[in-house]
Length: 350
Image (cartoon, rainbow, N blue to C red; front, side):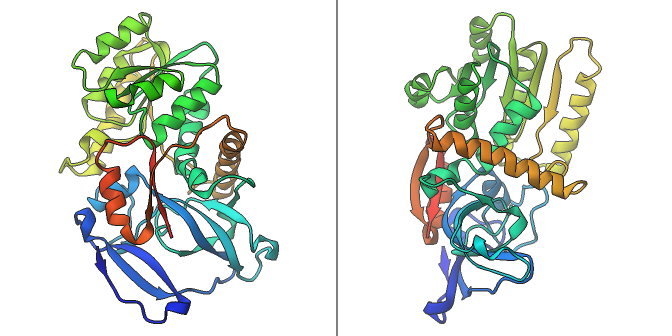
């Protein structure tokens, strides 16, 4: 990464700027004065943030809705409130909170809308908590709000070693659901210990392997791969089953306009909806409903994250931190996250 020298060390923050379409080592470490929170905002000092698929997509200019370059990366964070602006409850100062700003979290000090902050339970390690912020909300909502799984059902989770995938496995196990999980063989023992039945995601006969384990089909598939994988996943559903798509990891380096990819997926899902087989396919959008009913969206996000954090605090969920890397070495963290060799989430710390 290219460093920009600090000016006054006592009152500066450090942030990671994405200047354009660059390799991980092209990220810029930048320093500037710590801002003062204005009305409705809080200043949050970073304890932990992470590397997710969103940042990987933004680095390639392939994440829908991302800002124009340059901008500060960082989808979510855990931190401590150090100051608040007017019309914000002063008792927030000193509290540990989580937030999902979408961008701007890769900084030692973030200015955030105070209405979006969610308390972190006492005793939860900040890095552990960070693993279940955006990933935990995503997994919870896909499992319980979209697929609406029930005890005794069977689900297929692709990429079960990833940040979202391993939380999906744990939440599904907690819900009494049988889990078939795809991952590299290096992660199979860990997944078995988590209660899943692993399948090699590179096996050319993967659909047949899954059918052998679930001859009648699976009740839900969680697929972040995109491309041909969506069709294979849909075909593995039992009558009444649901495909929940939530990414395009296999198309990460595709040069096709991502908007066209989305439109193609929605068109395909629409055609599948006309089939008389009672199977369903939908694309999960983390921000769905935020523009129409922002207050209700914030309430739902806070409620779902609180549920996941409680499960983490009481030991039902285990945090999988793949690595803890200093924020100013974010380029190394991004490269590791993109290597597809890890279990869990890469965490950046100040």
